[in-house]
Image (tube, rainbow, N blue to C red; front, side):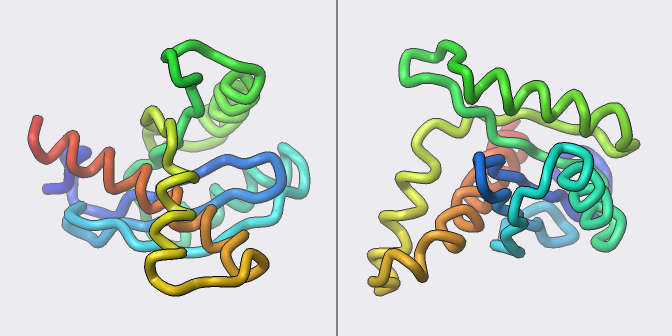
Length: 146
């Protein structure tokens, strides 16, 4: 059983303005690993790319990080992410879960620096993947302890 209540992998997403970081859980839903970064192409193409990843990896659910403000409110970016999630829900059969992603990109950057990834150019795409991994790992741990 995974954290979502069924056996299978879960895809985690960090939706940025230019890139989408993608992570994938193990089949038991215990740990998340960075998978890849998708360059944003437009809402329709982005939804298709994510749907293809979900199908390719036989994912049973999708977890999306929502960038709330530090006070827990909504910003323009929050609204853009929530609108994109609605587009995803319109075409996907897998359930989509939301996770508060405050500070995951900052933590991802710190983790990469700590691992010795020094050059900013090398870190850019990796930060998105690591942020997606942190979002997904947060979801997995929340549901494992629930």
